Image (cartoon, rainbow, N blue to C red):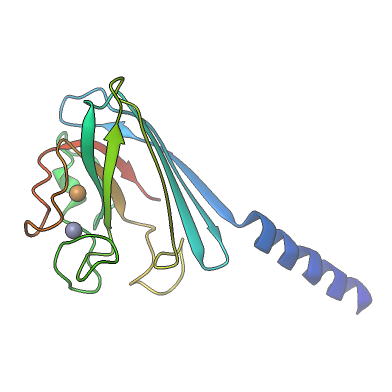
Length: 166
Ligand SMILES: [Cu+2]
Ligand SMILES: [Zn+2]
């Protein structure tokens, strides 16, 4: 009795302190040299995403969660449209209407390097709530900037990087 309580306590502590982390490589798409990594860590109800991208063109690049976890097409069209479980219009994160995958823009410096750390309690890693679960979706990095109002994609142009969130 005492031992099982102790084991349970240790396991709970491990889950709270370590959480779940998933690491992915960015796949270059549309004949670009895009490289980098994306990690997701869930602690409690908060998911932290950390994007480190390299070899982008300098300037802003839209980044979204798309609905299909399939980066196989050379132009990443296989990833489908924006992940939109709440059937809202495309927009800016937490301002008016927006898709659950409307992360915003990466800003690449003149070397083409961009980093974005993004935290939210609107996503989860593998929970049963399909309006929150990002496993089975993809991250798409675009050629152009998200203007936050053009429908349904923010006029972000082609797809230069892709990650299957498995
Ligand atoms: Cu997109
Ligand atoms: Zn969108």
